[in-house]
Image (cartoon, rainbow, N blue to C red):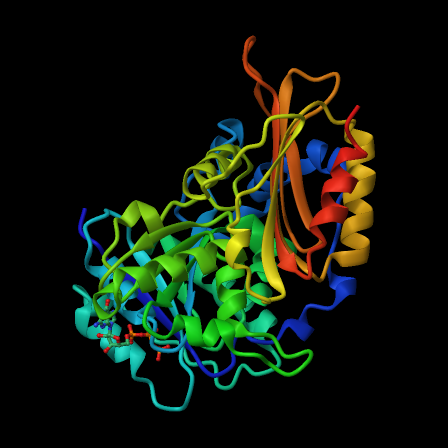
Length: 412
Ligand SMILES: Nc1nc2c(ncn2[C@@H]2O[C@H](COP(=O)(O)OP(=O)(O)OP(=O)(O)O)[C@@H](O)[C@H]2O)c(=O)[nH]1
């Protein structure tokens, strides 16, 4: 199938205001509650309201009967100024992946340059639709939701996947939270993954930049929130630089997969269909994390992550992995997580985990973005399989000792 795309454009500062997502708008679900509502809500609610929005699509009752997730996947491309986001977008739009892509482009500044760069690479310009909503400053979240819902309502039959390119200075947190916390949006669109472009030549400088108190370092945040990281422009640096940058990135985010690239050339399945927020994909994500994190598993009950503590940087954003045998009391764990989220929800950007819980033959899987938690029972443990808990936290000022202690307190 030929690749076709729609093109939507917004204007400055569109996704960069975390203050727009007030704590009161967030919701926190204890795991035991989530486990019962999860699939039911996403799929059944979809079927009851989809007809308002989606015409000429799958019959919603058929979808419900099949328990199919027919929400549109959306990929967020982020990365510092000049890191290669538009280059990657063009690669996506010109690759043969069989998906029809709708693009939401966030331009920083009055002059629309990126859209013409993308358009010039597009194979079917007539499919490109420009949307200019004026200045989205301070109405970011609502406008993004409106834009996405309109897209689904009016053009749903014209695309299979949405790609959102943020500005180089955008903070991805508010964008991700929008997908997770807006009920209407989450019925129709699911966040597939956050892909971050990193400029191999200049990234270290940006990552090391010390910002004034309460000012976030966007380059660090973009890495912390990502599911896939493309270490781009490797043609401009030595291997040793790539290695130290890779290690630095792993320290910030021990969960994301990393690929080296020139001109954003990566396989499409690295960026599309990532399933970064799908509970049924968490296991493979956490496993794949093992392979690139060079864990040095300790013998004994608990194993520490191998996040290169020999070259720690004083960045406040980092990740902590807990890999441990043993069985958890889900109620204890639930209480602990609730407390953690209450106290540190703003600082915990992402969490993913596979748990071995008492009185259950199934894994328990969960994932969270700040205080928005999803969890449900997963695959059964094999008869001779070692039950190993794996949890990854990514956030600011993480207290590794306290996290390990809290986790241990939930073991039976
Ligand atoms: N040498 C080299 N140049 C690259 C590579 N990838 C992209 N570029 C160039 O870097 C420049 C910036 O790339 P863009 O794709 O526009 O970067 P961007 O992240 O969209 O930039 P902003 O929209 O300004 O944030 C362009 O001139 C690209 O051709 C690469 O791997 N190697």
